[in-house]
Length: 64
Image (cartoon, rainbow, N blue to C red; front, side, top):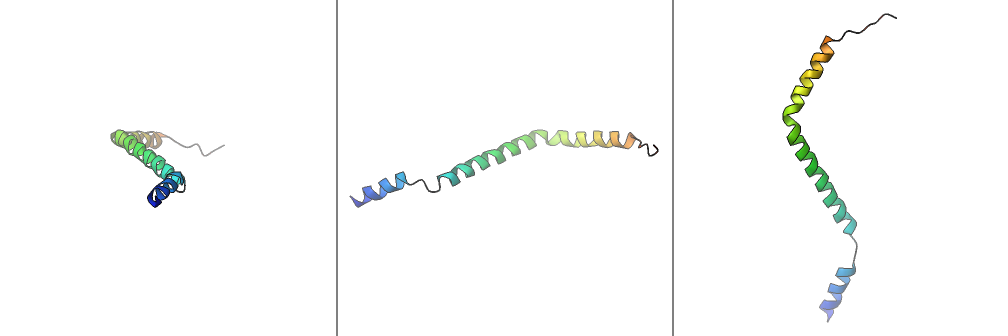
């Protein structure tokens, strides 16, 4: 009988439920970031090289 009371209180207790939700949401976001970064890994260096080439070819007009 005492075991049923303890189990009933445990089932109704909501302390910590928000923490579990945030842990699951955070893990999902981190997982999505890893998937996105693994898909873009090879393309990021080519984008950086293109930006470098564009900025190197520019001139700045310092006279007004």
